[in-house]
Image 1: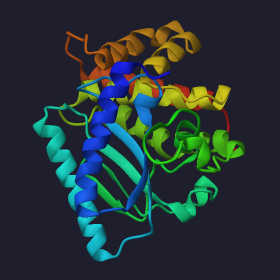
Image 2: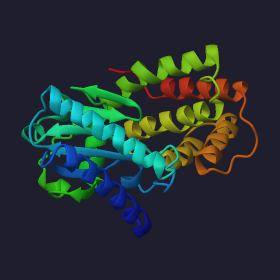
Image 3: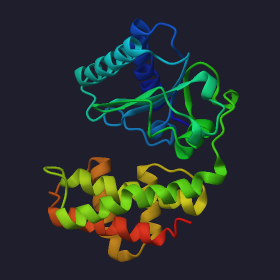
Image 4: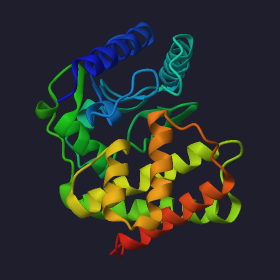
Length: 269
């Protein structure tokens, strides 16, 4: 159950996004749901992104896509104006006529994450996010998630996560071990890897979707004590309580942890 403070904050942010969208694309967004950390009870006001799925009335031509791109830019600028640190609105737009299709068969109208905007694709239209939307999505506008007829493809959930470990996380871990953290971002590199990859491992093992705080607990309970220091470092950065500097060696250790988690998850087939 989402706590009242979180619900009030994400509702206000969602409604502000919709005010911007409705000015440029009136009537287009029919249903709007907050997913991500807010739906998983791990939202941090002032830090967390506003992750959303929007159901829309049809596709967009070139001019409409340009207006949607403007919505993205204006909403990001509004977040910065309000000093929402690292709290950007990120979302994917799915046609109402496609919403009952198997999620892996849906081609989104568009999506945006931070500074990037994609036409015709969106990573968050996947079995994991559809499960979050169906089970725990926070409705800001439109029908209840249970009324959408979503096909979350539960039989593909494990395989999708295993494929993501191999296609994204294994190369990511190898790159960090070899090259160190992203420039000037060792702490972010540690947290992204150490709190990201156990979430997939947990879903593969249990069928449940968890957030980053729960991922730290899961990782500490699942993997050996040799990894506890790097898990604790990632947890403290996520909580905002980290005071010591994070080094390139820490980032490489995070890469090693990612590779260990990937290896323990099992074969992809």
